[in-house]
Image (tube, rainbow, N blue to C red; front, side, top):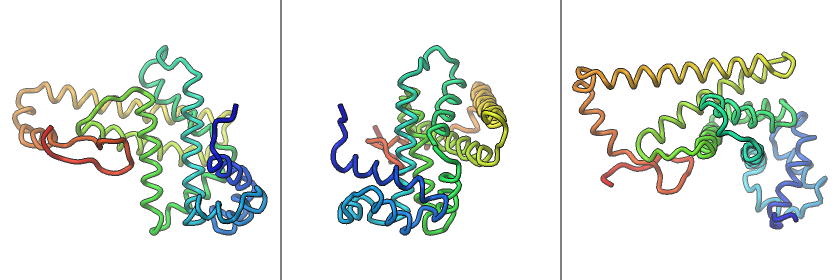
Length: 230
């Protein structure tokens, strides 16, 4: 049974129609108008769903990719994988949710514009947050931020590599991704070893005291959290 409400069905119908227009007209108002016409969704409802036009359409497509990533993850036994393999699998699921690279390439162009750069950064952060949540992340301190910032960088770099990758099955992209994850894990290991050094701990006591005051948002969001006492 289809459990989507009317707005979700209308959103998906417009996004389905947009896939054919974006390669030619980008994530633009022209694409939105054509997609609304093709989908048969009422123009008034479409305006309510995508009030800022093409940029809201692009963001909705990005969020749908996140949703499909999580749907795929729910069918896989992530617990049987090593931690690095779980991260790589989720990023791979996210990229494989894309029907056509040109949709992402056009989105990258849109979000590189100064007026939309913040939207693009929030979308990237949102993907990283969903991946960490799927992995069972329970951090509530500064690690909540550092994990998402690091993963956003890894995911963003992998997307750029993937866009130019023409190897069969994108195997070069998956090798690139594995190397990036290995680099991150190596850095985390070095940080842990450094913190066990008494001299390093003494030198970083002040900054660590400040960091302990940083908390994750009360509800998961794509905005900075708060500082203060528990």
